[in-house]
Image (cartoon, rainbow, N blue to C red; front, side, top):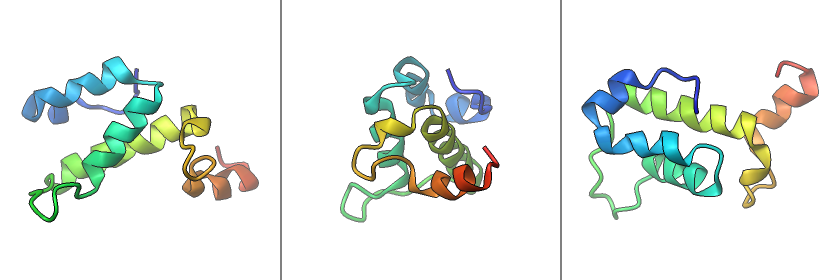
Amino acid sequence: MPVTDTARLYAEHPHLACIDEMWGTPQCREYISRLLNDTRGGERRGFDPDHASTIFQLLSEHDRQYPDLDEARGGAWWLAGLERRGDE
């Protein structure tokens, strides 16, 4: 389960609570990533900034905990610098 506070996000978008059930799986990472990208040909409204930030925090947290699940990039590219600096 994520540590990121998802209470407001799940209250407004209850269907996203499935993230907790999928946590730690490749499907979870793919699902969160799809939420942050327009996969509807420009038809997606998008999330308000607070919810978008929470979703990005979830993706970042998931990638820190399970870096090997991002097979397309060989791990989370934005965490590479942190690992080199020892900030993780």
